[in-house]
Length: 192
Image (cartoon, rainbow, N blue to C red; front, side, top):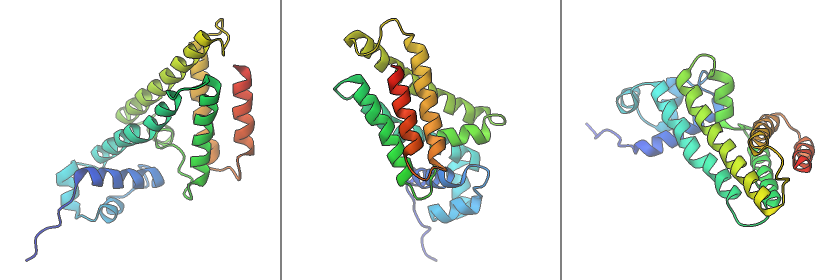
């Protein structure tokens, strides 16, 4: 009898993240996960406990990898509006280049699970709060440098920018090109 196949749990979470991101939580079967991870169902449940527990880890992995890219772009040196435009276009270009048009896993999870899964909703809420906080900090920086009117409500603008990102990520799932997203980005930046 051969030795059982060994697997790296972190790699397994990454693979599971890709499956959940592409198919959504409800449409992902345990067999989908077994096939993607290359392990048996027993190993899957022994390692992660349940499909939902693995999904939670996958959503955290998404947060730690994908959302940090946006944070890093917002913290780069340079004029605030240019950094913001670059970050928004990065999201649009990334989404449009994805052949599966997955959009944002967090936004997808919120749409699918928020009404029925408080754990997933809480994870997404914290991720969105962190993103909104980064936008607010960027706006406040722009207010200090004179790029953005200091009389504007930085918190409200941060919320507007978060809503813009959520909308852009959803639009990308069905967009035929970047025209609509371009109009949205230009209009939002013009309001600052």
